[in-house]
Image (cartoon, rainbow, N blue to C red; front, side, top):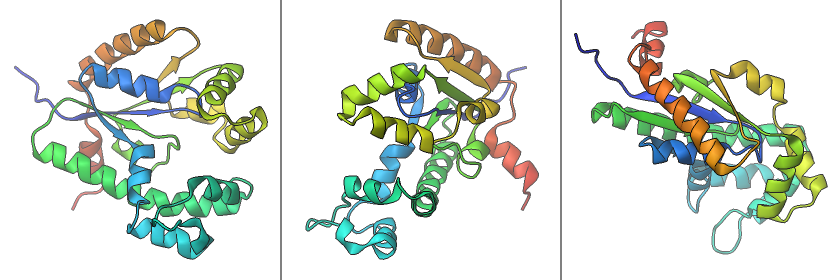
Length: 222
């Protein structure tokens, strides 16, 4: 008897510089569809979008430039030094990003897509991430390597990078959520080998696992 196939969602998360985006990209090389929360957050805070209006109202209209775009560097300077402001900003953006994620997943299911989907999310919140995922992959790297990667791509100081690392979840909190842990401490070729092996295992599990949508329906019937 052939088992019915369903959309199977892999959530990929990890701290800044861990390499989660590289892992997500490799999953897409293997045929998965990607929903990148960072990319979605930029879309929902674009010119004329409701989230941008909320941010300007809460944190100041001077954070929106003459072209109607959010000045992300200035906003970061405002919120990263203040945990309460950071939480408020995350709540504004999170609500809009979750709406987008739910919409894409719903469209894919209705269209009959039964492959793998990847949610690339830096903050593994329950609503919109954990409740949509069939597996959670946590990407880990040594702190020194994370700092090196972020410095190379951003030009930030080590102090700035470590401040952002400290503002994220501690490693144990990420691990507590993990179905699988991907240790990214070697070459890209080594990482790709790990990802493809885990992807093969996940594909097999997809045939035996109740999907995120099925679990939510069972817990919250209409």
